[in-house]
Length: 249
Image (cartoon, rainbow, N blue to C red; front, side, top):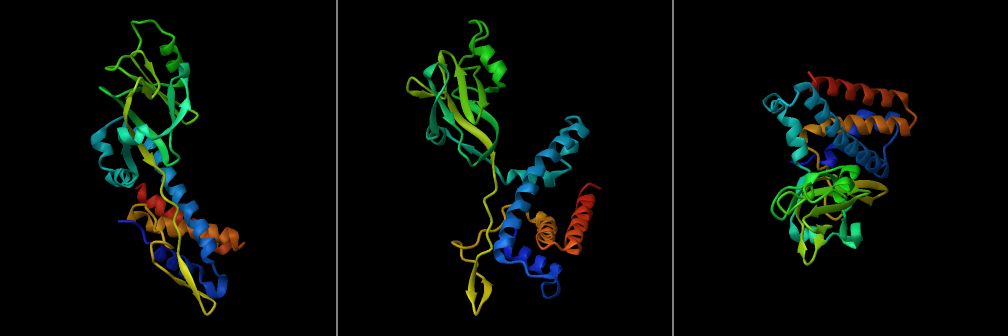
């Protein structure tokens, strides 16, 4: 279940005490809300990296932190052959076709070839494989892939590029997408902004519902900085730190 953007806005206004400390406009709130959402989203990857180092690959222990997995799974997706084929062409290695990854892809987790998963290589290793001999050259059963400057290249057999000689060397791309921009929609009546939940005006947070409190605290902190109110900024920052400490116990 997504987090209601109206719920977050009303809580932020209540904590900021708009009559005494200033009013946070819908336009300001939407800016702060999107910044808060992307910060929380990007923090997942740092948390995951830290957890993997602490647990040393112990999946059973890591699975105890099921909440982190649930939060990240919301944004995991896969593009099949038709979607991959529709990616924009980019003149690539040996004049074959490479593909520009769409902007909605945040991080690629893996690439599936026609017959097997591709080994993901950095640019140096990929170039070495291309110039290597026949014994180490990739095949359809042992394909390799590389992403450089947001360009996907796949090498399998005699084909270089995502598309080659009429068939696709990449049948699927597994990735995490970025959360959609949020918006607190409203209509103005008698000079006052009133919440409008219609889909064409309002977009809720895509983050897991457990992130509601942290969203409130982050937006409150940003609002305090914008209004130059140290008390609001410190209140939001303090609540955010407390929330994080509770999550890491």
